[in-house]
Image (tube, rainbow, N blue to C red):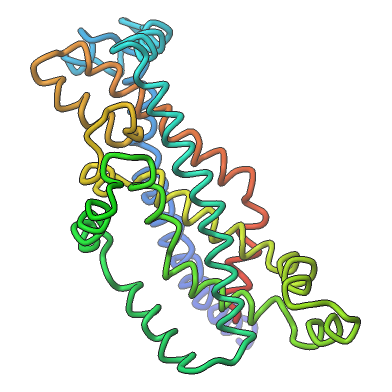
Length: 292
């Protein structure tokens, strides 16, 4: 009797666990499909010609035109897409690298130094995190117009160097990664503040620096509204704005449609590559930040 009741209780206990696992697996599977199906459609559509796309014949094995679409992408409008791609790499990679350095340095200063109204200033940083970037576009345009920077590289590049959320993350990572005792030991050995930061603290902040860099890279690469407000010269467009103009032209010039899809496929590759190469540092950085 006792063995029977024990078996019954065990079965009753395992049933909710198995049901819970099934529900979790189902939710994860749906999430994966929701994420990957648009990417799969993009890959298939990029390999089709204009007739297949206009006829919604993306899933068929006919009308394969991947190589031709790739050639057309870099040939149309005098190879303008290649310039847009280079612009995006310059805006995003250089901007994310410098922006991450600025954010980490500011967060380190908020964490390790004492100065007047420190917490009030940090409160302003937190308040700035909640301000949408689209709200800042018009003030930034007026400032750029007043300094003569509209329709220049700097009108898009300079604003992306300053990220309040990156400063917040920089302070969190500094609290978690840089012990005060290590800094005091460096100062006792005769190291100045800049030497202590660059040779000691910055090395410890490596995972945090990579994490902020990836956030910045994604935001700048997908940045659309600010370049649209600031730029009128197509030679300065990033990929996001350039593909938008081509997609608008596709309504009257259907030859743009296949190259827009191919261009969109190539546009996601740098982000995938960056996350794949820096995944180890990014994971460790997010874990440390969450624990703190």
